[in-house]
Length: 191
Image (tube, rainbow, N blue to C red; front, side):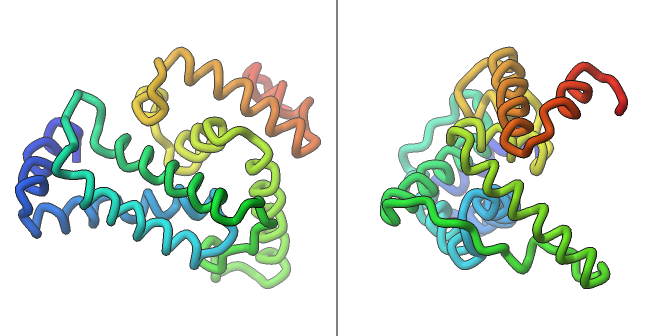
């Protein structure tokens, strides 16, 4: 659903139309959950925080104003704030337990173990990026959002997002110990 067609649905939801609220939830629950799941330690935490995002959405709907920025960007900002609150409550950033629902159950056990180890390594590296860089990387490469969509979420220009993306990928590559390979990728070279 495009952001233009989202406007009437949001207006109906603001007036308390339960079907419109349910439609918004159905539209955005999975992407918000995936975004949260990459940022927190457990699937249970991701589920709880996703629920908090939609409770916050319900509370905030009466004062929400359509400004031309997609409604989805507002939800990602709420999700980012709930994640920050979660870590403030915990006072530390714990090592992540690997969520069972992120693995493909059709793979061989040894392939699955390797994939789980790779996901855990990536999560640890991601947590060393700033919150804004984490959001950018997840939205661009997990959710496959455009530079414009990420710019809307972060409140930046697409050009600034591209620059931030470049720096975040270089930093992530350094954290993962694969700087040279990523430098080739970023230059468009095949290795």
